[in-house]
Length: 312
Image (cartoon, rainbow, N blue to C red):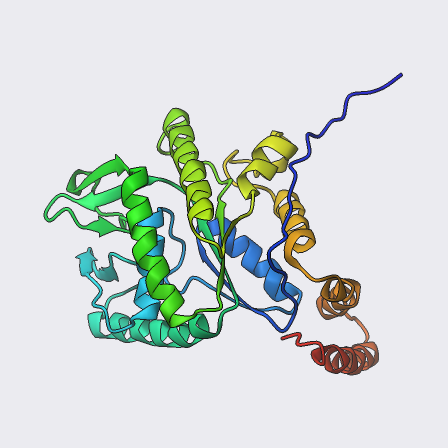
């Protein structure tokens, strides 16, 4: 008797490029992007993540990358309570001292200006097409920084304005780094604060927009993170208890598909050896002599793997 397949597999193919441990990877956008960045770093890739923290809507994400291309572009600062912040950054980047905050953000921008210049593959994960604008001057904000909601206008970004922003960003990026490959993906994190109907409207708009960008630009590609979680796994077992964020198991599942899609076979063959080193590092040694022996062995294994471009 034939049984139904419990999973509807999302087909993932890539005929355009691959990367290995010598490649430099950048990841910007939503918190799902940061989760994938952690996997890149665990396995020894030279990878960096968004210096401005977690960002969700495409316009804010593209604006962040533009500010790395041109770190002299001014940021817009605000204050709520005792803390200063930049409207372009996440809520984690705040300070009671405005000068200190300005210096911190300047340092991050200059550091990632250099990193972006050397990046081979840039993953951009968009999370929501809903965006917030200050009522005072209609300027876009990346994060509301706990400022009262009555100071903002919330609206769904149009396909046209996202496309125009991407065109300007794309042209500037290719002048800055002509060899870069861009991978667009839609975050599977559900923005239920907006409401489920509104979340689905947002995701649908992002999916259509990302595919449109892939059709228009030769070195822009799509990876179906959203579809793998929502259509292939398709079960609340693969979400955290909040029902919003994918579980560790689900993120690992997507990570495996990223590796299968983009990583060269030679690099993939090293994963078991890298994981063995990580597990030795994470082991809690009770005996001090065993700890010393293990540390020596770890150092030897790391040195042998560094020849492949692995960054510990």
